[in-house]
Length: 572
Image (cartoon, rainbow, N blue to C red; front, side, top):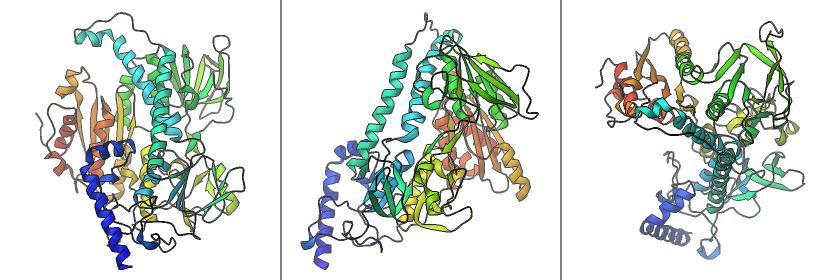
């Protein structure tokens, strides 16, 4: 045993020295594979009781074995000093970890599991990248990028400020759509390559939960086993009753991203993140937009002050109008260029049809939220209750058999399917957290520190509590709420871009100095919010943040102004 351990240590040490010599090549590989594990100091996890791990007879390290890596989350209290490569013993489970679903959450969990030396497989359901890469975040940003350039070049007054003038601005719809499709394809391919490059076994079928430690390949009797199973099936668009989807004139974001045509007049049902982003695309490309919102105001989930600024910048100057406190109870598809879409409008409070009903438009985009894609898992067949499809989990991502129920051993659920925070990067964080807990290092995700962004022009971003929520918290806990704002109007970089409209707002506990929430609307808000999210996660006070130095001239100085204002300081 001592000899085998020494040989393994020598091999691992030699491999690390080679990695340092070939550092440039490994930078390329790690970028391609979306991991920096190649540069972590080799160590290993303790041997796990349920997965017997060994080396081949004679001490030879198997070529397929992956050396353990130090946890990227730091806590090494349980790390063993021995440096033995990890390998599943015959007669045990097929894998250490099986992941069902290959969206951003499942992909992130798979990478981290391999980084911990766990034998890993992932059921992709033929959808590597999931909603984010194929029907959501990634292609929508391609459309927004193209539409944003069209909007900018069509804004003659804005260009005149730079001394620039252009003629008629035209776009090729098919090429814009092809850009989005190609981007999705490239990213999905890279994700798949990163999995295979790290030794994750890709199972193309859809996975069904088949009982403890078992996943069935859908439509077959074939079972694959693992010590731990992570469910990451994602979500699908929610379509309310009475709405008929034809994919041409009445569609969800899944179909809208194909940009098969640009309607003259589009009704968008719902004015959240997805609805706002598509309104930004459609109006830039020449459409008129009518929002139909069931809540009392457009953009109901945004901070009220940010909402008012957004209304002045994203709604009023554009060909956008809308109904609030109104349901679209029936939508009948039409025919592009021939027959309009018919929408029945009902007052959300009285439940009576409003005078403007029915509304006739060229197309209707349904953005009424998303629901968990958990029915294919067949959890109910095994006594696991869901709530409206959402899998119940604790703060370690362990599945519960019912609300506030018992932990289902060795079963985890991440991402949209658990409903904690339906964002791609939240799913990734939960996947990493689940793997940390599987590996024996207790970890919990603080969802209050996860930022969100709406990629309109200008952008909106936020982290933590809204002002309404912060006021309620201050009243309940008996502390004084502080508020500080910064303006893009006084920022040199924003003025150089002729993008002085916008603001940042910081909400904080005056007693402790802790940041409770930050909200930004303005150019590159989605990038600026990360500093604020990190501050909340680290527990950094406004007093500390006010003394930190920001590069000049940059947009980050808007945040600097905001934090300095919180402690009564002025910024130049």
